Length: 172
Image 1: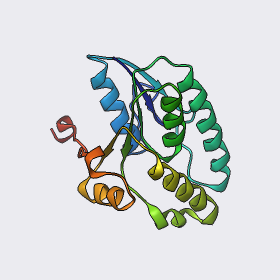
Image 2: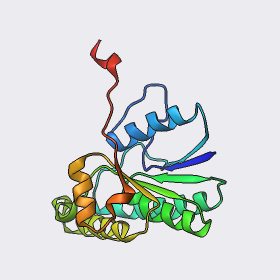
Image 3: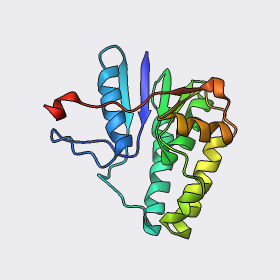
Image 4: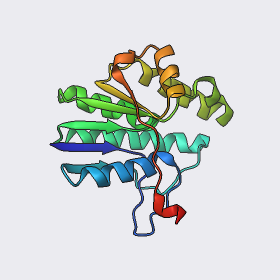
């Protein structure tokens, strides 16, 4: 099976510097999946982009680029992991008639506006649109996120809760 992960950020060196939970999860899940599957990852070329009005343009560019890259990639299943990857991944999977799994770490709703009205509007709109899409399956980070997804109209039968893991070596 060929798995494709769309993620905005992904560590690019041996130091494994993570800027957030989305790329941390994607890194470890994709590394684990490589034991049994062929794995490809489409990521932005940036290490980290703060949420600013200017960043909206670079994120729109990444959305366009990742859609075309996914469309040109041979995969059996695609996983998308945040508001910037949901629409391009879903579109590519739909065009290719492939299953698509969305991982939702949270549903921010009106809290998008805490990033300012410009960034917040794009984030809210992207999230709202993503919640309207007919996902094959949805992975939720927590039961509270699952409840938000259900309230937004996603069928409970499509949702699986998978809590974040820990690296026990960090506590030795």
